[in-house]
Length: 391
Ligand SMILES: Cc1cc2nc3c(=O)[nH]c(=O)nc-3n(C[C@H](O)[C@H](O)[C@H](O)COP(=O)(O)OP(=O)(O)OC[C@H]3O[C@@H](n4cnc5c(N)ncnc54)[C@H](O)[C@@H]3O)c2cc1C
Image 1 (cartoon, protein in one colour):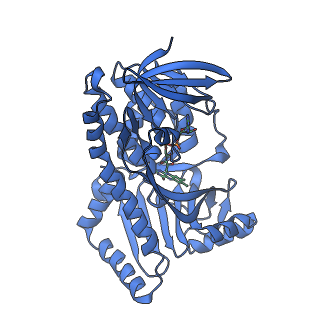
Image 2 (cartoon, protein in one colour; image 1 turned 45 degrees about the horizontal axis):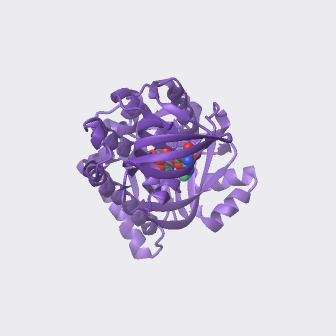
């Protein structure tokens, strides 16, 4: 006999886990979650990967009781952002004060947040299948029938709606035959934790360099997390440098704004690409988070967009009759609510990616002047700050 669920979620990353907990809290749907990896162990501190989360993501995690469990070492507020262009004198500043807010958002330790989400799931009513892979999907009476394999044992599940939260290379998206436009940036994002000689002042520092943007995201104890996006060749060079030489290269890239830099973790790297699903649903499979869209990390928006998806879909589901949660009407409403926002953000990242690589003198001058003009217009700057904060 197959175990019957209203909703099945595939993928227990930040978005799938958070959505499962949110549905568990706000509805009486029976929910199961299938994750191919074993349940996460508590991450080591030097393995930090950070996501900058705005107000909506914060409130989402807060509402399911997870944000509060992170503590100051794993969720650090930042109150200003300083952006500069390496090839012009262009500078931009964003301040939480200008919106009467205490902060612009939080730098959240992503593996720790994922671990806390999974711990909360284990003590919830969500039926969790970790270390499990979906062996097959079929359909019977409009329900999805899944065979899942856990440590060699097969289980049968049947779900009314299947949510794909299985990341940028979504297997479930492929099963649904949803095409995704994929564009490689030819860049890698290098991430590491650093400590700086000068105080980071709870400011997120973002420099647009000719070879790609570098971000320094403030953490507790004057440590910071970096995301240094660089063309593949330059990234390989940077990764092959010894620690001291890498520290020097980073201090120079930051034009010594934060003084001497010391590595506090090993360096990891990720290939950067944009992935945009053509549609967000097919049959009774619907996409959320990176399964629907994966974008360049330069403005730290990927997970924020995923939380917006989760909230939009969750709200539509809890306002629907149980029998209509997989209806094309509901799912197309979700697609209408989320697809253009996600696409616009992706397009903006691509425009910025190209705009800061042009090294024609007149364009660089105009780019710098544009940034400085924007900086001098408080109302526009305020609107941009609110947009970046997700409020
Ligand atoms: C360098 C870098 C920096 C970033 N910085 C930021 C930032 O500052 N702010 C921000 O908002 N975003 C940032 N992002 C983006 C953010 O990390 C992602 O958007 C977010 O983590 C996506 O979450 P997800 O749950 O949708 O997918 P994922 O995190 O990819 O999770 C997918 C889950 O599905 C599981 N899975 C996959 N296939 C299967 C299968 N077949 N069966 C079962 N389970 C499966 C995986 O094991 C995984 O647990 C950054 C990304 C990068 C690369």
